[in-house]
Length: 390
Image 1 (cartoon, rainbow, N blue to C red):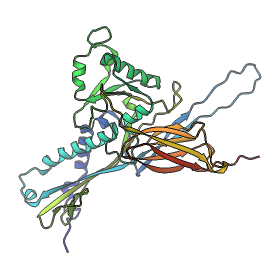
Image 2 (cartoon, one colour; image 1 turned 30 degrees about the vertical axis):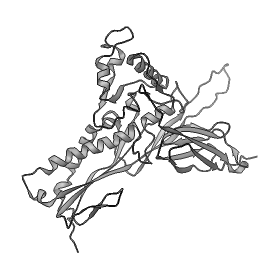
Image 3 (cartoon, rainbow, N blue to C red; image 1 turned 180 degrees about the vertical axis):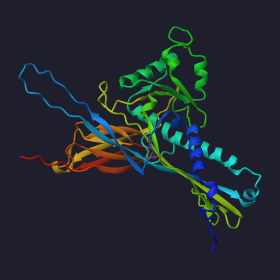
């Protein structure tokens, strides 16, 4: 029976300092992580956040002895779900035996770059998004109606995107886009035809996604309050050395390496993390269906690649009557059902997403997962409403 390299054998590869350095490298490689707020590390695969959902009211008394009215505040729950990213790096044993070869100097930057790109793709455009992640920023902004078709100048387009963010009760802090956006800023003029130096738009921080994660066919820029997006790490980078495994192509099943026969070892690298946009209620915009701290500027030639996802919610204890006012959380996007019991969203094609349906009179939440293909998805949800006391 083959011998596996033990944790003590591989200790030089997995000490805490190396793990921290990898994490820092991933954060630097990812434009999302470098601009979002990092929360404390998660203690489980799902972290609940209490998000303000209803504001208190105050009332004029009208007279000296009028009875004081009461009000309440309410908090809703949102979750950061940790998903795992991983990679296996096969290494010939002869390379490891060569003590003058800095294997980590070669492997580490590539791992950091790949992890940063993978996270950014899921966060910005939803590419290869895990089911547990919320909807990406572009899809979320489009669902909220915060999308700008290019105006006469880029300056006006950014100004319009900022207005969407401000109408949602947030202050824009930054602009993010692909490398092609750098040229736009070098030549940008304000509404008076003057260089933008010293303007409010010029004062916003700018980040250019240079790791290949940005798809300029889907968006030119994201404008928003980047402090409102958060991420948390469940498990720091961990490593395991394999020497007896068979490594297969997950798509075809083809055997790529037989480590024992090929005189190789493989370094398996894993990381678990999640992100969310809390988007709490505020005085300027109480409706979460249109409230979002980001807006997107679309490309000049834009083809919608998303499909409609329609939820229909009915009450099982009222002869399947359509239920108005149920709250549907789909991929972190929240809308309430209309009089026909429907809530409509837009989602990326060929993707999976989680949903949660709640109502103030429900006995329990209804949870599920939706597989969105290349056409409209329709989901029927039946729930039990508490019977009111006579």
